[in-house]
Amino acid sequence: MSVQEKLRSKPQWGSGFGQFACWVAAAVVSAVCLSIIGYLVFQGWHSLSWKFFTTDPSESMREGAGGGVRVPIVGTALLIVLAVLVMFPIAVGAATYLSEYMDESSWFTRVVRTGLEVLASVPSVVFGMFGLALFSMPIFTFLSSSGAEGASQAFGRSFLVAAIVMGVHVLPFVIKVSEESIRAVPVSYRRGAHALGITKWRSIRKVVLPAAAPGIVTAVILGMGLIAGDTAIVWLLLGGTTTMGASNWWAPSQFLQVLRGTGATLTTYIFFNSPAGDGNSPQLAYAAALVLVVLVLALNVIASIVGRRRKRQGS
Amino acid sequence: MPLLLASAAIFSGLVVTLVVFFVAYNAVPTFRAEGLSFITRGGWDTQINNAFTPSKTVFFGAEPLLIGTLLSTVGAVLVSLVLGTGCAIFLSELAPAAIRRPFESLVQLLAGIPSVVFGLVGLSIVVPFIQNYVVPANAANVVPEIPIEGASLLAAITVLSFMILPFFVTVAVDSLRAIPRSYVDGGLALGMTKWRTITRIQVPAAAPGLVAGLVLAAARATGEAIAVSMVAGAIAFSPNLNHGPLYMLLMPIRTIASSIVETGGDAMSIPSIASALFALATLLLLFSLILSLGARWAFAWFNKRMGVRQAGGVQT
Image 1 (cartoon, rainbow over the protein chains, first blue to last red):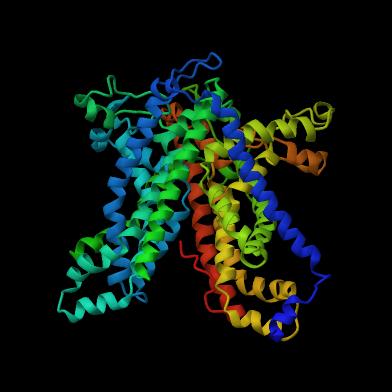
Image 2 (spheres, rainbow over the protein chains, first blue to last red):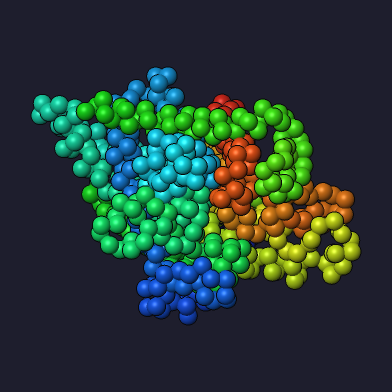
């Protein structure tokens, strides 16, 4: 036994309380986390049924008459897809540029990094207000619809608007995780490509980005989880309803109307039906919360599986 | 092609200035009409109601919202500092290997729970619990000026603490793990116990990471809208110590962020309300600017003082 190990294994009576306190803190946090999940399962389980997933919400004040979550689930999926479409090219481009091209010591890099840091700490409700301010301008009427004031203001609330703002909201997070995974690509890959006489851009496209792809995918999937869980942006920019603004939204010919119309997501459905909202169906809110938590959890699990694959490839 | 990448980087670095511009620009009417009295005057709730009458000129006072935001943030940061430091030390130093992984996943799980779910659970468990077991029976006689009904500052602090805790713990664990092994070995070689090494060497060396994590957690607490609006009572009231600390915690509050989601929506079509809400959003932007730059500054300052090379990766 080395001296170190001997010292470490010495009984430490004086420090017992501190260590005990740490165990207690961990136990409290575990208990809270498990009881949140347990409570949702216990309260929401019996409201989950085929009917719950295939009927639309109704804005009824009667107890338990909140309807199902078909439209909110479609809304959440649509918002995720649109926001990823907006955010993905910008995030990958910025992450690639930050890790491959930028000189870390230049003032320009510092400005961009500071901007990203500040952007990351802007609360989502402020993004919602920003979206209303920007997309209510009349030139953006094509993204939503014309407002009550006629041509002087756009309505500023639609799937397109919410998706753009949501994309910007998760941008710093996705850039950060993507950049880490691009930086983690071994420098020998780049040198190998360089030795073969390949241009820098070609080596990024053919060598570096494919090697970093699992990490970038992880970043995007985690970002999808953030999008699915956000309420404030959706509440402000998707109209604050529980139904689709466009009629016959399932018809392909209505697709543009749906994109330019208002809608609902799982988070607004939960908010509306919770005791804090206008609806009066807490049981349905629990069930929808269970669905949402399972969705976010599944996204996190997929992200960690993809991330692990990256590690195995990298070694 | 690099030009395209550069423009993506420039866009994402500078889009925050767009956010600041549009939010602040729309807040100009309110700040021009009221100046600093916007944050020193009270009476938000009645003013919002009055503003629905078109003929009236209304001046807004957001002082209780500011107080509510500060109190709930400070409370949540203190709770998660105590609980979170314990969890971080447990996770990085004390936990047996068999417990470490599951506990790590639990913390990540907590980080993944959406805020509206925190609000829902807080409203169905924390608020009734406070009402039934914490609120004294004669509360209505002691504090006649405001309903003491469970939805309170205390409920907001409870919910916020657990919302921000995983973010603090993740950063704290990273910084604890980033400390060079030689520091710990040096302490042990001097005959320090393991606990003493933790409290005298590892935690101080990781302090910049802890502070930065705490500041980032504070930024989240300040900006949380939905969960707070569900559990905090939604009454613009500044909790005070007139009836003692317990009653102060039991008083309802309304925060800056929660007022935006509560009032925003249809009321945005009334210009004076819209401008007042944009003024609130400007305040939130100011906070997040201060906090995110503060996190960075805390990092640099502690690093210099401790002579530690960057102990944790907190470059968000």
